[in-house]
Length: 221
Image (cartoon, rainbow, N blue to C red; front, side):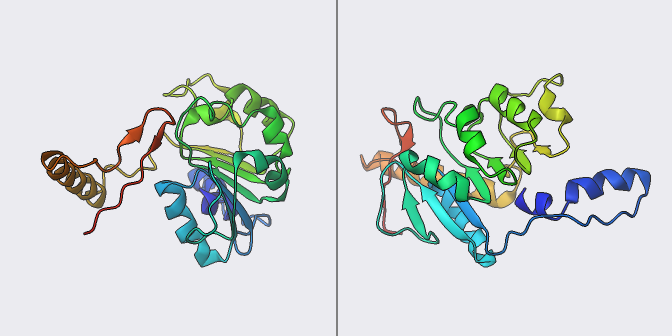
């Protein structure tokens, strides 16, 4: 989604229907940009790993600050968002849903972002208030918004979000569940968990229902 916005791929895809060759003279740069990843679990980790190829300055937002995290330049908490958002070129949400994360990105948080920032959500749709997002987009705030998840899925075909040229919507498809590698990963996970269950061990990817987050369990391979 970041590359799509920065290289104007959505615009060019639409131009293909008309057979138009119209190079765009505008765009954003990922290289050396400041990226805030809100929710640094498995998804956030994998995103940061890939963004380091662009020499991005990456801030990870976690529930608790840790001294060091792979591929991350600084670590902060949700309480620090008001300071970090105005500095970030890209804000990527990879949060689970919990009572603390529902509508965490409301009008106030959205307007604290740079006017030319890009917001992407690949976690849970409830993290962004659709109503507030539409209001902010109508104010021509934000360079682009990439949504793989929304509050109510499927997104109604009457939603104003479909009409914004700077919004990219995909139908909760970023997980790549059709890929053989993903199917292999989950099959192997289930097999390992059956063995853990037989051995009366804690399961991998078990969720803490108090926090809504996955418990971290490490097993020797």
